[in-house]
Amino acid sequence: MDLNNKYVLVTGASRGIGRAISKALAGKGAFLILSARTEDLLSEVKKEIITSGGRAEYIACDLARDEDILELFKKIKKDFGKLDILINNAGIAKGGSIVDFPVKDFDRLININLRAPYICCQQALKMMIPAGSGYIINISSVVGIKGYPYQTAYSASKHGITGLTKAIAAEVQENGIRVSMILPGGVDTALVGNTRPDLDKSILLKPEDIANTVLYLLSLPERAMVDQVYIRRSVSKPF
Image (cartoon, rainbow, N blue to C red; front, side, top):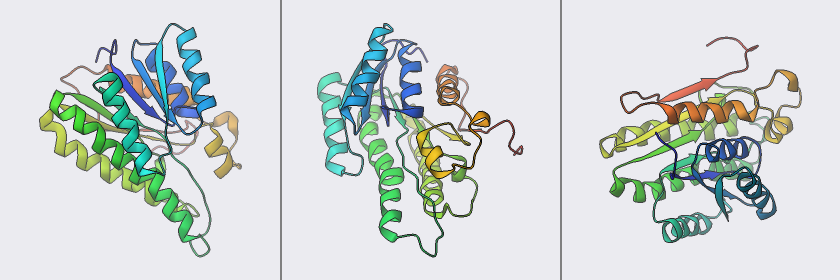
């Protein structure tokens, strides 16, 4: 896919993986629509992209609020007229024993990690299907295919993303729309640092590794398709 003049929405674009993805895609000629809750951080990313010769705009959005998500896509349609690529990247994590894990925290994880991407996909497809083209990439996690103790709520949300991605891919293939999923292992971000402080940062993946994986998926010719990429730390066990 030629990224020149493609309009790309990245959620969670203000830091970590989302920030790296946004800068990488802007460097390939895409117009970035940056979204997250914190306007100050979004403004910084926008400035970095523009200073490097790229193009970007930001729209603040709290993914915990349905009305914010709907307003985000309403503004995208009004201001840009189309959406070529959606990168569902934003997410939160919290660990703890299932015996003591508060149900309200489970609900928040599901709402932000699964419900919000569902609504984003739904709204993006309302623009992509009439256009007959588009690409959705969901950033999941290794916990979307494996189970880890003390991560039941987070794992449930990411397993949900796996099912969501598979079903949407099957449904919209005939509309000329591609849907893929990236499942990273431990990445050196604040989210991983807070949930897994035991991990040695020197052996973690970097946000740029995930950004390069996104570029790889988008670089494939029309005749080729990759449904999912599980990218792990080189020191972890294969398969």
